[in-house]
Length: 157
Picture (cartoon, one colour):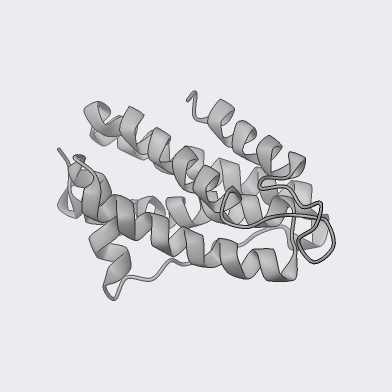
């Protein structure tokens, strides 16, 4: 099982950022003011819950890092190119972190990839989308489902 000491500072920052980026993928896929607030809170809550409950040392270490002084650093994103370009960039960053884990700790790679997809899924499920005053809203929009599926496909989950 790996911990922060198994990675360079840059690799570790990418790994710690990855679950946040997985959640941001969902927010970017179907942005809504009130939904985005709930979804942002869901990212932190999910990272914390997994950090406390996981049997995987790497995931627990990420949870500890995120509850401490280590805050995620948002990478440069192609925001001027539109949401689809941002989604692709977020997926690419998650893939890069998963590849680092695969390289340094292959026995944890599958759990890490599943963790990223689960953070995205729980973020998507945290608020209703569409409708009017909650009437006619759905738990997970089609765009959010597509984003989670894109991430799962990219990580071979």
